[in-house]
Structure formats: C-alpha cells, structure tokens
Image 1 (cartoon, rainbow, N blue to C red):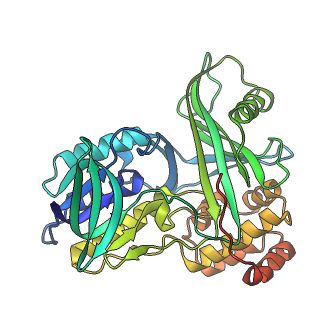
Image 2 (cartoon, rainbow, N blue to C red):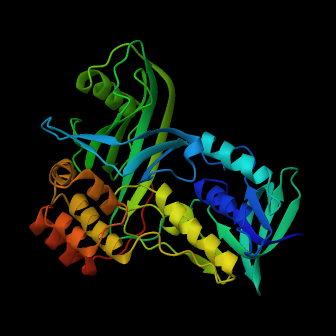
Image 3 (tube, rainbow, N blue to C red):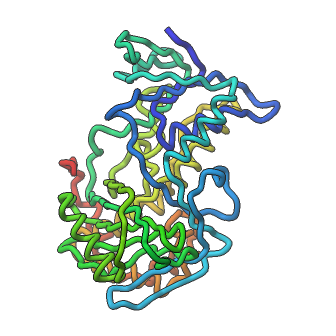
Length: 397
C-alpha cells in the first residue's frame, strides 16, 4: 500500500493544476506528500485539446501559451462586424500538450509530488481518509491511502437537470499558402453560419500567424453531428463565409461539453472531493472551464497549506448559475434566437465587461446592465417556469 497526505486522481487540467500548486509550497507553509495518479496511455487518458481563457496581464502558465490576443471580433447573423480591445484582459490559448510539458517539468523537480501510472477502479472513503484502489500497468492491484483525495475523472453520466444542451465542435488546424489571417484578432463568434432548429451555431478562428489558425465550427444544441456533418459545416464556413482557398489541414480537434443547470457534487465522502468539470467548473452558459479550474485549485491548495478542510468552493456564484439556468431554458425552449441573443449582447455591451460577466467577475449592477440588454419578456417567462420543471437524467450525446 502506498500512502500520501493528498492523492489526486487524473492528470487533466484540474489534476495537473492542483499538483502544480502543491509542488512548490510557500516558505513557512505546511508541506504535504502528494501522489498524482495518472491513467496509462490509452482510452482513459484525456484527449489532446485546446483551452482558451482570459485574464489580466501575465499569468501562471504564460510560458506554455500558443498565442494571446487583445482584440476580439464578432460577426452578427446579418454580417455586421463588432470588434473591440479587451485590455486589460488578454484572451489566451494553451494546448494541452504544452501545458502538460510545462507542469511535468516542474513536477519532476518537486520533492512533494510523486506520479503513479495506474488505472483507478474505485475510491473508497474510510475513517480519516480514503483508499484509492488501482490496477498497476503490470495488472497487479495497488491501493493508495490518503488523508484527502481529489478526483478529476470525467463523470460516467451527468446529474439530472432541468435543461441540458451540448456545446459540440470540430476544428481544423490549418496552414494557408498565403497570409490570410489577422494574427492580432480572434474571431470569437461568427454567426454567419446556418443556424440549427434549436440552439445556435457559429464559427471560431484563433490565428497563430498570418498563415496559420485553428478554425472551428461550434453548435449549442441537443445532439451532436456526424463526422461528415462537421466536415461539411467547416468547408462551408471556410470556403463560403471566409472565402479561404488553398487550405492545408494539419490537425483536427473535436469535443463535446455539456451545458447544464444540473447541480454537481463537490464531495462524495468526508475526505473525497471532485474538482474540474466533474466538480462543476464548466460555466453552463459558455462551456469555458480552464479559468474556473484555476480558481478552484488555488482555493484548495490554500486550504491545504493552512491546515483547513479543503472542500473545493463553488466554481461559479449562485447568481451566475441562476442566470445561466434562465438562459439555457430560454434557448432550449426556442423563446430566444441564440445567434441574435449573443450578437445583441456583444453589440450593446463592451467586450471587456461582457467577458468579466461571462467569468462571473461582475458586480450586481453590472449584471443588471447586461440583463436588460437581453430579450426581457422571454427571459422572465423562462425564469418563472424554472421552479416547476422536473430534473431529468440526460441520455448522453
């Protein structure tokens, strides 16, 4: 049996972020032994992915960034262009491979954090701690005993919810034979795409140079598309909307992010906690997760260093979750046109303030100023019916 003060299950964004914060304790703070349990190569490993987020100035992981931007652009369904400087914020892009390399380099030098490749089978709460039952790479059973366990593995199924939509996307990493991209500006939401019967769709362009970019097609809707459907949507967006030719696709990424008003349990036993998307870090209205993971893991690391009970705080405020529940219901019911809804917000609210709103960083009066720029009557009707809607399991994508 292996023993540690802290066991972290899963080495995705949340698991690696927490391990990194515990790897280098501040002078004079409590030193803890940490075991990071990572799945062996195979289907249980998180897929390669790209995370985007915004923050002020320099950040903890800037050394791993692919790119960062100060200018964002939105195209409304009728073709109107809205562009703004989001200073003092910067919109940042980080690829999971680069993030893992940066964290791995620091963990390798840490005396506090050890890594274990094993498949986690169950996590069992015991008196004053927990057992993590694993199977080692060679097939033998191996148990880890820890005072605190933080589980970042994806949930097998979503909790019951009143409304659940899927943010699903397919992207191409492209290289062009001539400079066609503006490397200083992100195309955050381009609504000049055909809109689905329920939800919304948009194009998304992250330029990493004049000739290179990640171009994605994204939908918020109840069901995912076929691979052929995504490819056709991307061809339409790149060729018919953006007018691009001579593209070479050098890589792809695909993802599905639940957008749900379901409550996520942050604790499953007295010493076992969930972090990351499994602990509710994904913002229901946008699908952004990375920034909330950093807030969550920072709070946990601070509590552990101070000897306090390290229950992860809610990733998003009660007010933010309530507003998101209303928006999801209005969108899913068809009371609001999704593309017009977001285009209207970006047209009437400065982007820097809107990004702070989407990150739950605005004050009440700022939230109200955003709220009055939404379709008020459909939103009020959706809010009024929410208390009477049953929570149902989501069948899955």
